[in-house]
Image (cartoon, rainbow, N blue to C red; front, side, top):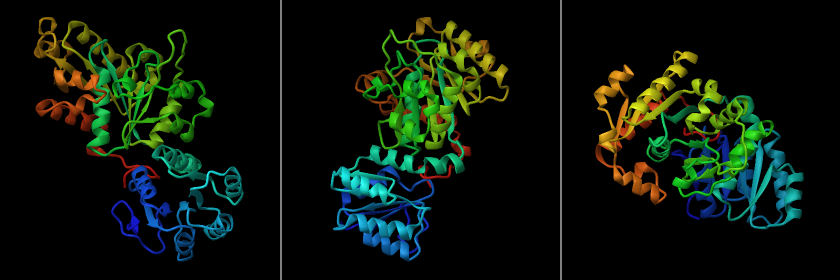
Length: 399
């Protein structure tokens, strides 16, 4: 492996004070670590080498909060890790990586003070979960849940609110390099996983029905990643399975998601809004999506009024989607705004390329061009508050 070190954009230093310091012996593992924690919330440094190189770095003053060390080149992993743990001290969490899939080795490493042992080849998802597990106690104590929460709801069915939620989340993740959690609260008929060609899981239901178990590790285990920066939490529950969404469980779940992600985009079906309207009204921003119909106008007015009654200062963004799809059934934008008594924030024209992207399992935003794309781009910036971006501290936010 030719790479000596990989750190966001920093050069390796003796006595590194980066919160995460990793020592790996092969290029594949290095790439996985860099991909999962690209710069870390406060910084990650990845160096070439194994236990002895790590030991030397600690003796020269490195003091990471989390130490990831590769045991592949060690002939005596248990004594080596014991020496490393003694020098690192109790303030450093150690995660080991190796090639041997041996339960006895795993138990012996745990007895030396190692938090976890991962067998190569490691995946980005298991590494992410391990780091979250290692850091969850510190996070709960020192890192506030300060990611942004954006609720997206349709004023009525069929207006494409889910497509807008997916498009905004994808754009924030891929173009603005934000770590984004995308939540589909329609547990029976939600289509986010389907639209992104992902396997639906029961992770969301488990989280909401077991509020006492919700923590960073539990949430991370339920997430399904679409890209390096975009993670989905949803479900596809049987129709004969009743589900009662509790507001306190949702608030706890969102709190944990805000610890992990820069932006949490929540697609909520309008029939659930009355049940959790307090949580919705406390969001950083609520995006109401409609079409240019009389029914859409009426329900957008009702949703806006209900939310403003609970929270007068709530930030609401109004969007008309698929404008021009059914011209005979639409009223003009001018008449819509007159009835709404306010200007619409964004108007997205109908684009058949968006429907094709959905069939192909791609986000709508990947198919749009020209003014439609720029409208979405402006929408993403607005709902995520990029102009006044709040930076998080901890292991997983961009530095």
